[in-house]
Image (cartoon, rainbow, N blue to C red; front, side, top):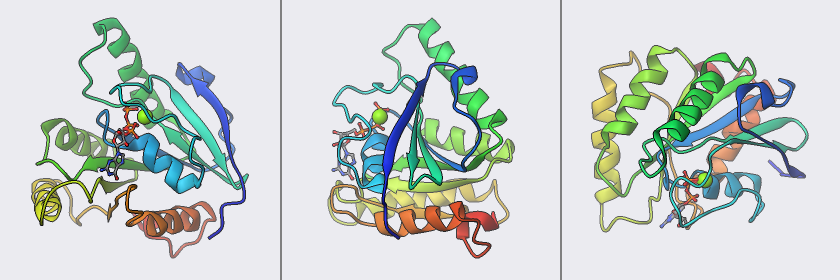
Length: 206
Ligand SMILES: Nc1nc2c(ncn2[C@@H]2O[C@H](COP(=O)(O)OP(=O)(O)OP(=O)(O)O)[C@@H](O)[C@H]2O)c(=O)[nH]1
Ligand SMILES: [Mg+2]
């Protein structure tokens, strides 16, 4: 699959400001600092498309990017970030919920989980919530390069074990490292296939 264009559309501070529901959307969500913006840039093959920051909680709006004039990637604010005012947090929690529950062209929620650390309650809670909400999602483990030895795989197995009881079939999952370009092509290919309406796409089955 070839990326021929990747353009920033708009930053939406509220649900009403989201662009028209023209293209299938793939939304990246996860805790602050999990690597959402970094992975988005890798998927779009454009280094500085989404801003990567050393400061957790940087992305406070929904940022929309159109790829190949056919589908969109959406960078969502990180959840579980404490260092903002309660009012500000309430605003973007509402924004995330509105988007995830109401957006009709939402093709798949990519739930990013940091594989360099043990399973975190915030991630498990989110997976349970999105499952109950019955929205299509896939798990994307990030930073596969970061933990020493076999730790990443251990964390991933622990995570998959913990979520297993909530689902009849284990959720679709990808293991990635944006740093070492592991798993990125595979995820990109799966997204593009789903975006083109291919019935064989793994994302479409769920
Ligand atoms: N080792 C390693 N570091 C990564 C990887 N992906 C991202 N990072 C680093 O993790 C940090 C956070 O990355 P971001 O992409 O800004 O994370 P984010 O989820 O968008 O963060 P917020 O916008 O604050 O929610 C940056 O310092 C990245 O360089 C990876 O695959 N491996
Ligand atoms: Mg970000």
